[in-house]
Length: 121
Image (cartoon, rainbow, N blue to C red; front, top):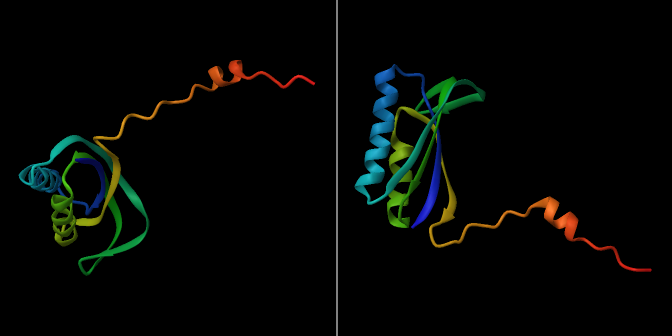
């Protein structure tokens, strides 16, 4: 199953409201057979521009990142659920990688430089 990252902006709510949004989202992912790997609160920030969501204009919001693993059919239902959640301003889901893809080997620049041999003239 692929790994995804959900970046979402919520309305400014009380502490219980934020907990409720995160709990609902995580519970929905787990009910569809997914796994929540990490949740990260990026804090309250001014939005880059005024955003309209559910017939309200918003200029400030709270940013969250959730990394999770979920199947393709569950992802479609999750996107629909996030779109209809009235506490969310902007939910965005991005595929990070598939679980079957091998980790990419990072190129060490120093190794490449030391292995370079200029052509002989």
